[in-house]
Amino acid sequence: MSSTQPNEYPSGQVHPFEEMKDVSRVWLFVQGALSLIVGIVFLAAPIKSAFAIAIFFGAWLAVTGFTGVIAHFTRDKDLRSGWGLFSSIMSLIAGVLAMMQPGTAAFAITVVVIAWGFAMGFGYIVSAFQFKKLGARYWWAILIAGIVAVGVAIVMAAVPGATLLGLVWTIGIFAIVDGVSEILLGFRVKKSAD
Image 1 (cartoon, rainbow, N blue to C red):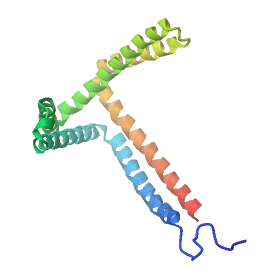
Image 2 (cartoon, one colour):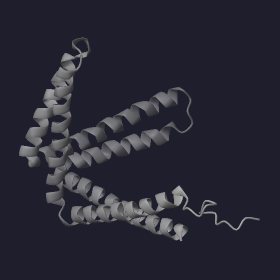
Image 3 (cartoon, rainbow, N blue to C red):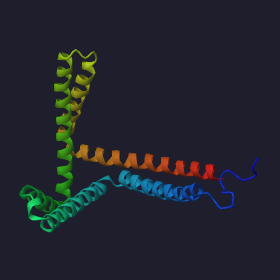
Image 4 (tube, rainbow, N blue to C red):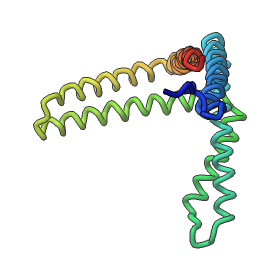
């Protein structure tokens, strides 16, 4: 029977997996701490956080649009698309406007979330009746989910400010839960490395 430890090679070197665990443990702690900070900031300052989300969203749109325009002119002529160029220019303009007017952008994000709620709800309701025609046994569960989604969308449309606040709080709570879970996982990896 060999006296070699399971975490070591026969030559006494540390197994690469052990080194990887050390690095991943550090990054889990870093990611967890950053997620906790972001979550706490989002809960403590939801309005400023909503503006930050809008600015970040605008920057993402602007970068996506800018790279799309560059890509259009750097690819072969037969691979270029007029619609692709148009959508890239629109993304660039929308991104710049969102960064210049984050309040308007935050409201626009809220409108998109509300529209998504209505679309999902009505989609579920239509699907439920299609499933009923096909003889599905639990079609009514999808119908209930659709009705609830439409109801939530109606409430969100009635109080869009609360919807935006709820969206920011949801992101904040998720970030805190994510941060805690990453830190706990980091401790678990540390414990298994010892």
